[in-house]
Image 1 (cartoon, rainbow, N blue to C red):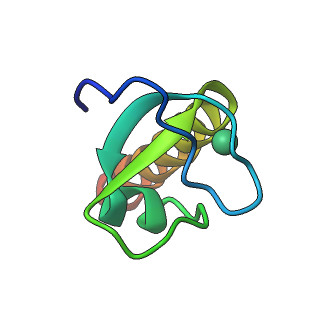
Image 2: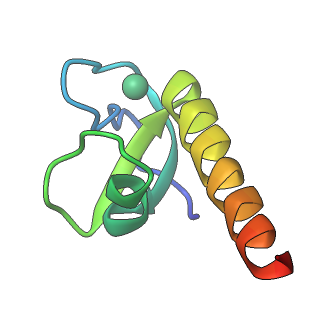
Length: 68
Ligand SMILES: [Zn+2]
């Protein structure tokens, strides 16, 4: 989760909004977002929200899995 270059655009296919976050591309792909096969993925506000939602869900799932 680092700084982003000025003018960077969201990496999600078909989006192209201004990016607000740069995240490891692998993590973003694991969360199910369509980004190119690159080390860093740029996410706009909306897709970052989606990414957070999905990673949160995964964490909850893990908690559930291990608490049983
Ligand atoms: Zn986007």
